Length: 557
Image (tube, rainbow, N blue to C red):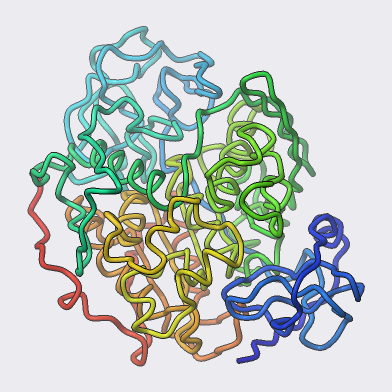
């Protein structure tokens, strides 16, 4: 199947992608499919045609043609997101950071607020998914014991938080502005690979590693951590210890410098400010740059006053390098033979960008209003970035295909790109996933639980029902099952899955997405709206959740 996309050339992404040159087979050198990104320049041509659906990067003889997708920036813009956390009234320097500061590289930068509170609760900067918080200090008090109550209805859309602070509409885990809110959790023992048995239906997202089921919303914080560690161990590879990050934010650029264990790496990203609104702006990290990375309605994004951050993930993790010689900023820190796949490495780069924004003076961008988006392989990356960093307020994967949103257990039944093909095409998955490419039922998790990991934050999944290779039915099932966790947490309207579109061209702009895009921006970035998310699936590509679960959704207290 040929999927043709026609774009004009822009120098920004040409320069970014030029470093990805490699050689290999040209058998799939036709169009961009699930693989999604530009094909590297190869041995026989200047600008290669793009990769095929699920194919390896095209290399030989890749001259320009109508099916080529030259590296570019510009075009339609993506959307942004916020970290959904509000400042405590004691004066957090960036969106509800613990104690009025920002934790980067393990160090808490105390600003005008107080020190961390005396208990594991969250400050009153915004609601979390349940429980009472003695709090990360609100109202500027050191070790405040009155951090406020986290409403049991969940973090999205609660406007006032608890005692001692004023929340923002849609709070991140109570204003606790950290990458991994559950890092302090004591969780059950992960299963060994040898102990795994086939689970034909989707694993129960509400059953903890100790075999008990969740009964309260407060338990989600540590249940999410269990799923995270399962995902890192068996599917994508560990994200790694948070490094020390420094850098700068100007009106046009972000510079990121990372050090850890005596190793260092640097990369940059470009800022495109909107023509409306005023700084500091909400921002969207766009994998691959505007237009190519996020084929969304640029008028909607611009009118909302949202900036675009053009991010070249190949500077952080290159494709075409195999599994034993991984390259890019991530692997400069964690090693060329790291078992971590590209998708997590790319997400790590997004996290480091957020670190730098959070440590800036806040005059250009809002650290608590960052979203991520991308299409095809960049949709896979955007999805995993939002899954693993809780500071990202709005996650918007587009036509992500295998290794992205679609559940693994239905891929072969649907005729989508196989798990073995996706695993072999590029090291998107972590090395450990090789055990499940032929037997996904033995995987102790599936992607519906990754969907759930984004809760209670905003999630807007855009899919293409007209290309079976993308796995739209499997993506629909993932969204439906993940939405059950959203519902149990009281934030069922924070997730949108939208595949009811007419245009079947891969990674093209869809007018049907403009209204939900606007709604999501207003709710999770601007914090001015409360429109409910929707599950709107194309009639010819829908899944039946009843066939995929033997568990029920509990009523959580």
